[in-house]
Image (cartoon, rainbow, N blue to C red; front, side, top):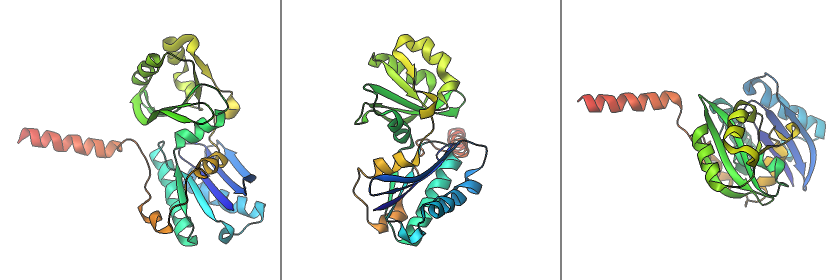
Length: 236
């Protein structure tokens, strides 16, 4: 079985081809190139390098969020378009769980996180090799996360390029219970998106129409609109 994996939920871009449980080719990059300009060329290039045609793909796995609104939207839209055009099943995987999978050999709590700006983060907590969910994917202020992690009272391994933004505060609050994954594990990999997707049953192709990104937070424009409507209602 041949899988195409797509990961564009944040600034890094990763695309992979996995055949019968083995990685055939994978691209992982973290350069200043918008996914709208780089994702499709990367897919075309990796298929050519692996010697496959789009029609050879049996299933598609995509990182469904949370993360950058633009990044998540581009990846999901691209994956849905390919899946529907090729009539292949599409499986979505949490972008946070994908990142945590890089360090799933760690025997303890794993906390992947993405910077959501203004001291906010997208995060979750998983445990060990099975990536058992301890805290579901959600959006929070960094202070809220650290309060919840302190309550767990266990050593925690943080992973992700955005950990840099919050590391001083993390250490200040958690002390020796906080540790960092090696920098080589900080970028999400499309091959891990595929590995996690393989744990789910393949959906019917018709389900592709209803596949949506998992933002875990409404867009700022929508939040402002809702705030305006609430204020108007209050004034009336």
